[in-house]
Length: 80
Image (tube, rainbow, N blue to C red; front, side, top):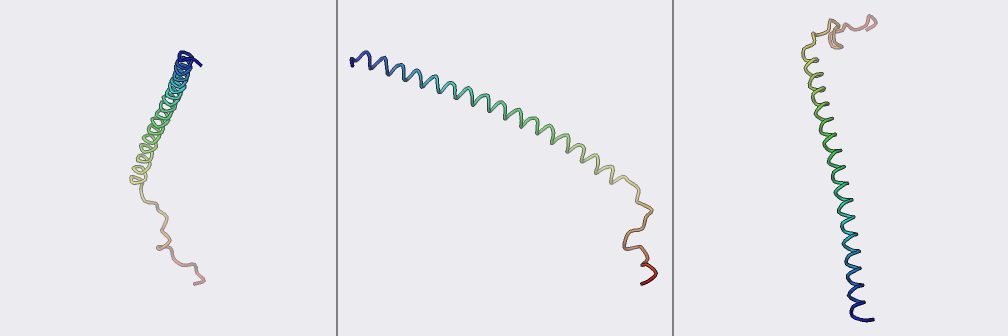
């Protein structure tokens, strides 16, 4: 083989490797963007759930106590 054939072959191999690397980087960029979108969506869901949970806790705190006696306050059944 001549020197120019080896040089052309090396240049083609390098170009193929560069194209392969560019393809991998593009795929990784897409994957990172997709993961970022998922994380952002999960963060919004966490914030919504936290808000709802806080609302439920506040409603429970503001509820009036029940007129039903607790287990400790109940009189034992007559057969005791």
